[in-house]
Length: 68
Image (cartoon, rainbow, N blue to C red; front, side, top):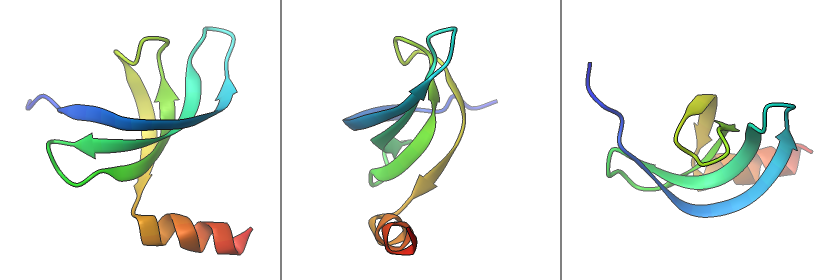
């Protein structure tokens, strides 16, 4: 299994936090050296582990904002 490489380029904000300290965050993340995308997922306190999430392009995040 290949290792997933990631870099959190910008921490935008925390949406929620659970009792174990994991936070659901909106960040700008580069996955495997690709162009950074907006990313919503849960992270452990030091960002060493992550849960499942979703990535969105800038156009997709703007369209989502229009829907609200």
